Image 1 (cartoon, rainbow, N blue to C red):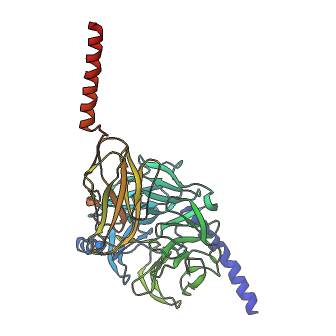
Image 2 (spheres, rainbow, N blue to C red; image 1 turned 180 degrees about the vertical axis):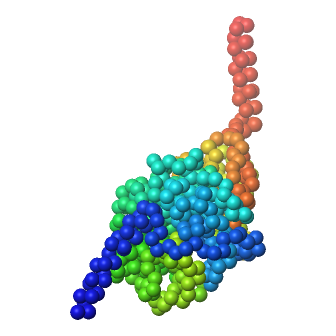
Image 3 (spheres, one colour; image 1 turned 30 degrees about the horizontal axis):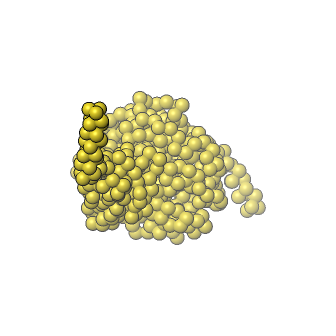
Length: 479
């Protein structure tokens, strides 16, 4: 009799579950959302505290779509720092999914699933600035039913969407094209795009992980969007946010599926570590490992802290439909780059050297550090003392990796002038967690190539010989 009652209850729940899944796919509603939170008035003091935590990587941007706002929480404890970091904004947000800080450090970008755009807000006030991407406004030929967002090391924005593509936009919101094309690596219906923060074989810092809610997989791509073997291919159903734990493991917020729902943890190679699903929760969307080892997660009923022992530690923000959780300014460092010409003048056929020095003034570490140096035409790349490559256009790229606070790394470039003249160029640096991008370009370094010359004595000899022949010819004519 008990099994019959259980079966009846499960069957009666199926229509509601199906409706939840359909709503989640399309972003058409929050079937589990409770009433809006009571306190929605911006608090300047709370904002000041949140902004003070960003350089240290201590703030999480947590989106909730009940009130259509972005909250700032502590990455260590999960406590609310500013509930209205981006205040409730029904005029410009419908179903916000994820928020991150623009590479200029002055804007908050928020993806909106229903409006099909990424909106921009002032980081100091939370005021709406305008639509960031696509530049010019919504265009469903470019973005339609969008979800998670991420930044490339060069500051370009990546946006996942239901069409099975991940689109790329410049730092000004101009559409560049697909970063990951439809069907690449099997991609069908992308929900999140996440840039790997730390290397943990086979994952490499700078790789991208993409959750696919049709394949029920977490796919992997390299730093340029080329497909790699997937990380997770079993044990999940409707994966939403993808994150990385401190030990390099992959965390996946799984929205549905009776046997796989919850925050699921995998090793970097895809082996199941654990599934965390307290009995009172369901419909998981966001996940992030707190500094205390517990997991902050979001559902249609709020923002919750759970343990790896499947216990609900507490509900941090009740009664809201939580979305993705994004660390703001993770690392919180200050990158800078210098370039010095060690050889001022290069003789014909010789080589010269430049020294590049990448530095992080702190106070936190910066990951995914990349130095780019476009060599001017006529300056031929010979070799480098670091892990760097040069492409056909002569752009030298050095993947530095992670720089701790106060750490520097140097690389020597050996070059050969193809012709005489002065060769001047600059290098740039970028990385995840660099909160002061204003000093990311080096000064001008100049190397001079000398044109091959005939020795002065040889020139004088040729002149004398010429005069001798001219004299002989004149004497002959006189005769």
